[in-house]
Every structure is written in C-alpha cells, then in structure tokens.
Length: 78
Image 1 (cartoon, rainbow, N blue to C red):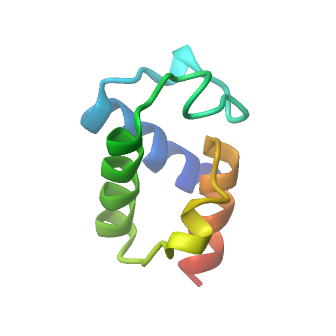
Image 2 (cartoon, rainbow, N blue to C red):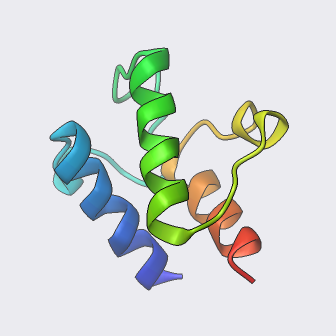
C-alpha cells in the first residue's frame, strides 16, 4: 500500500503542487485540501494515466480523500 501512497503523493505534488506534509490520508479533497471539481478530475485523470486504470464516475463520487483513492487504485490495479 505504501508504494501506491508514495506514487499518489508524488502526483499530488507534481500536478497540483500539494506537498505531502500538508495533508493526512484522511484529509478531504474538497474541504481539507480545498480542491475544486476540475482539480479533482485532473488528479483522477493523472492517476488513471499513471496506473493505467479507469476510475468510473460511480467510483469517483465515492472517493473523498487519499486513503479512499489508494484503496480504489489498489483494487483496480489487480
């Protein structure tokens, strides 16, 4: 799981300039990180490209923080 976490933290920093020390895995994307809808879409697109997976709209609406994103990536990458 740590590898996925590291990769996602790297993507957050590289694509959205959000430093890993500024949030926890439970920090909400909208309220805690203050990401807009387009930034979340951009993040998910970067995750899809990086891990070569597809995040369905149904799954995307359930993902509110890094922990949930890591779990979804882990599940989809199998």
